[in-house]
Length: 637
Image (cartoon, rainbow, N blue to C red; front, side):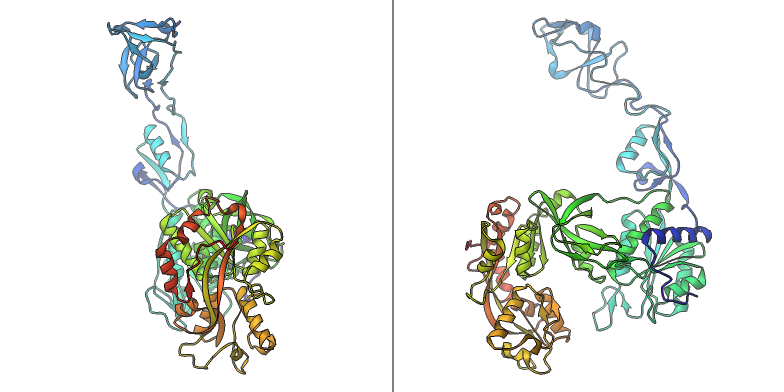
């Protein structure tokens, strides 16, 4: 047994090589078995032997057009001024695909043929031999190599194989993946949520990931955190699968048994890889079957599958894993990264001007929604501490460039209206995406200044003038011509527990002894509002317990209060409503959209302006609670 919880932090490429070496030593099959399948069921499988043409395609000289077959020599000299007339017995009318009659060597398109009263064909241009003729073997010739070994079959491949005489192909069968969820706290999907209960979403996701790349996958029953139970489940799965994935239990906690079980039953090759998220990975083999211990956090589990399971499954079929297309993009904001580990970061993408812009999504290993919203993957190598805003980076694309080009990039303050707008835009036109990044109002204006977004959402209060947004626009964007469009007015106030058990009446109460506050991040308009209100009351920030604790959205503030981790936080009424919490009003403020004036009529942004004019959308916004839409869509500068 290893004496340390992790053998070492192995770089991903080395870990994969070590795993394959361990599997070879454990006599794991190098390839899955072969099977002969009819062409109609072979798409997606990998060829286990070459596919040779047994006949030519086409197998005869065939007409490539509707028209007439002629002898090319008899058309020499034909022109507009000196047409050539071909007698009725010297041409044959053909349709596309018809065999070329013996003795004929060219086809004239039907629309280029004129007939006289005697039925002769009048040609006004000479034709070359084999014009508009598909010659024998034009597509493929008998005995020609059509498909090599190790080729993953596509729809066009089986069609070509059929044309070349094949009726079936020898392929590797689909690898079988067994996914074993573990943990005393894990419950089946559909279980009512309760403290300490985690739904088994990981196995659902991993099975789907396996099936998406052509494997057959099944889920086992949830296994309790007991070494013998895990060992029995792994042994059973190893006898029935080509790869066993054990979900959770791969770290070094008291209930993490995967590494010890794999080491006891077979070979433990790696425990701990230099990848974030996904550090506590277990790689080994049991009873001649590869075993992967995936971390319990969903982002880590998904990433672990992509890095380790996908290449192994492809190798079992004798193929290479599919590579995602890549593109260069500019970072919308600074991205810090810890050295020593490859850092896999999910990003939203959109085109701003001539540049593709990448906005990093939340980094937590448990933030499943970051996988849902991601348009691309950015890897920060282990030797870098991150990237600066505006820096060009290489991104693997998870969506097509065409979809990305129709993305409206919004950076700045969080507001639920933008989330609702994103949903409504997609419902109206599935090709349109509104991608919001919550970096605070000030961060949004800076991103707009640097050409990293289409729209900046802002509600910054200038304490000196009492105005919102416009003074900051002048400071950050200088003389640049901008447009400022009113989105909503909204109620800001204290989000507190249901029933307001601590009796909050206003901002003064956040400094009461024993009150736990949850704040917004620096640069957020809500943080500026709090500081303004505290200053008016001569309350020092350090008098507020929790002032330094930051969240990036109104919903996150509400979630902290709902969970009992904080007593109050400043936010919008709609967030309090979403969590069925109480709300103590503090102020009513405008929330504005700022953009470069020259982009106001940009067709890419037009769907948003159209949405703001719809009465149904305005009604939906007001139904969120605490919003006024009387000025929605009005340009205030």
